[in-house]
Length: 215
Image 1 (cartoon, rainbow, N blue to C red):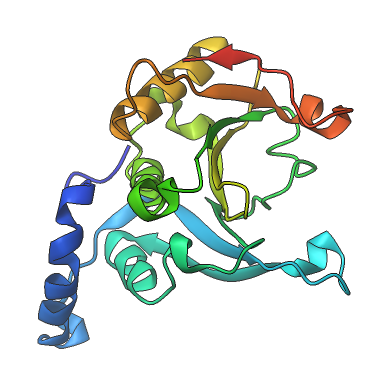
Image 2 (tube, rainbow, N blue to C red; image 1 turned 90 degrees about the vertical axis):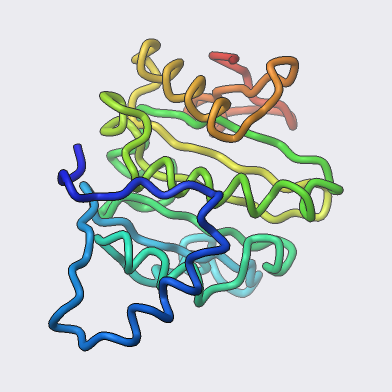
């Protein structure tokens, strides 16, 4: 769990973050106390360049391990809704690559949230930020260690958000993460979100991947 002085941020504080950042600038670095996170996280960016391989297009941007450094990063990058079509943001625990084949991911899967095109302006950025805050704030409680990272895919036909976990066979953990995710994103009970196992995604023959869990 986080240190006793760590503050778990919520989306409602987005409007305050620029003011807080400005306040930080008023003090010399030696008097600022940063709030450490339980894990170090790495931001990745993918932009489709057909002259390069998928792995070459996946670029590691930077890592952070405090709440203040997260907000500093978030305030200086484009929102997910502003990315070029075909681009991704990924945020994973340091040392885990945002790919199925990574040792931390290969036995896991992802909770997948598919958005309609119109939701890019209404929900995409809010959902993505809330997912990031859930991860860095260890909001999944005893199952936070099972979370590897998250990916947002910006696509012409509709954007997608995925929260990746390490063990698809851990039903209790997977389901608790899914329920907490749905609660924090304020997704209506009538709308179901699905969990897909990475191995099933890799071998799928059509456009649909088998759903293993649903909440």
